[in-house]
Length: 305
Image (spheres, rainbow, N blue to C red):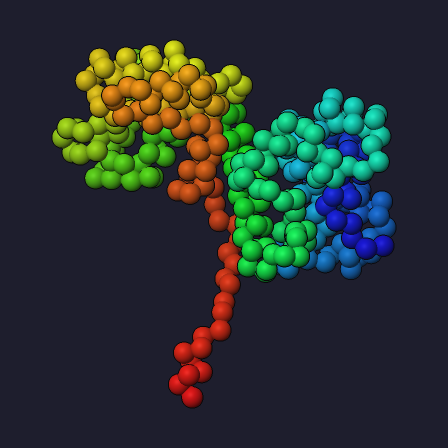
């Protein structure tokens, strides 16, 4: 029996978690490999990058998409748990459970919207896209898919941290972006020193003549409204500050966004998705897993002949 694609594996993953209970990815792979009667050779078959077994990679992508849609969750690292939504889906017994089916779930659509994709998502080694795309475009699309998944996972991880950790993270991000580049000690978290409603400070020069004040809100659900932003602007006014950055793991309300566009002070709002994207761009909380080189013909070399 051929190795099933990641979408075909979605229903078996749900059924296995329903009948067997919480399970690690490795155990899921082993059980599903037995279910599909994969040979030893098929179980050892690697992805094109040679980084992981093909079956393992496909089960991993199936669980990723199901988790983004809210059908499963990870109560602890590396463990998959069937949610109430997942049980309801199994009870309804739809004809097919795939990426198209998952579109009905708001959480999945939010995940898909991270990088403004307009085509079906797919796994790294079997990218199911329009034949109109050339190989370079397919690579770019796969990269966007991986970035979107990473950003979503990264934001979820940040939300699980303590407020103290988040405030430290915000300062480290600003330094990684080049603000306060004159010294590694140019930034500091301040909330726990009761510094007047400000969570962090970035000194852009050694004398502190130009300072950026930071506000960090680690929200898991509610959006940040205008009152919170106004309070931050008030704190800036007390310090006679001209610049501030308000960072949240959630979203900003329309009133909050409109407010900062009306005031004289320069206040930048960074929501959860922007935060995750910036962390990826400036290598904070992430590491390089694979590097691929795309080479082209060097016509100059042959012109010499």
